[in-house]
Image (tube, rainbow over all chains, first blue to last red; front, top):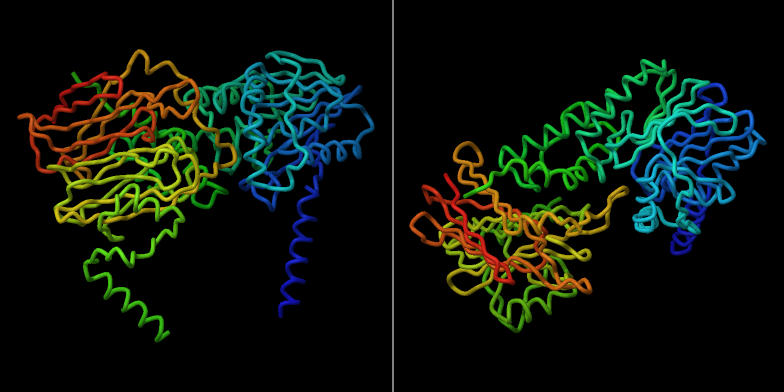
Length: 312
Length: 257
């Protein structure tokens, strides 16, 4: 029996080792010369190694533009290898859409390339990147080994940008964080929204400003129409060929905002607000319960402060 | 199955009998099995008689996403003749969180706390007979994926608005009798080099005639810009809240009903 157990343990750890080394990244062709790696709709954990995010790349005439680099050095390296299996062209530019760890901790794999981000994103990565990496080590374990911070070295601004022989339009926005970049590839009419848009996966809010975020979603809706966007790549959740993920994200944020204000107006404290049930429609959405609880922590204090009145 | 039923009946039987304070020789086992309980017993309760008592309800999330802002609710309304509620965390560098004296209010209090690491959060409730009734819950402080700690007192808001008080009372419906009060204060612990302890020390809630209804002695671990949730009990009319921090800054506000 003891022998059987030790064999079982050996087998399990062997499996864990195997699982912890390969993200099995398979590029999905989503438009002419445009590819995405679609992550799981889950929380960071040792089984997924943090591959819960959508990243992508665009193959231009002269080089490749990489959009976000995933949660670890290993992810970045495997992403780069997967890109090399599609095209021999060099990497022309790497873009980090915002400063959350699943979007930039693979930067090390692109050490020989410029890494661009908005000024606010660069600042956020420099300030909080190490703490984020430490947290991912705790949550996912061995997948993170060798991961170190690489801060973007090129500041990107809103407007047209030529890279790798491809014409991009950069949208400098905010709301999910203080600096959120959306990347539009004009040739294929593909829009990478970063985490400004979640699709059928509960949005994360540690740095969110809900009113600004909703303004930004309106701007993205307009952009979808005026630029005739054909493919939308959200930061998390399935890729879409229409604007429904924008509406989905807006609906969640509107519900969350209203729900927290109502809870505060009803006199609930944070524990009671945490205990309030999610609406039927959101109960089966991946990680909705966990993200709701986190959002209460991030956003309820402000809703609560707004519900109280000054006294003479 | 028979065994299980027997065990259940036994548990129910025990629960129906009010617990008796243990003699010093055989202390009851800590239901939270904390290696620090022995120190808490000596240091925090000073060797006074105590019981672990399920009627002292301490509610906090099992996992704290933001360790700087962990909500805690203490409900000891199942006990009578409550004199004092002492809230503490076994593994915090500053053990004591606050003391609450519900002189004329129900023994109910909500607030938020800063936790340094995973720890039991406990309330010891002293009744008129001098016995401490202890309840508690475990809080794990591993952050979530995208969770960043708040920037805390790096904001300069408090300098302009120190001790500014906002409140609201609920006089009907399920929350009837509830009072919520927020005080702008950085609540610095003194554990960060170069920032001395700076925190609210006392809050007294009185009725219009000046009779104290509830008193709080507040320590550093209470979160920045504290929000307290209380029940005013049978006190009618406007209320008065007075407070003071450890630097002698005070507040005094009238809370209309």
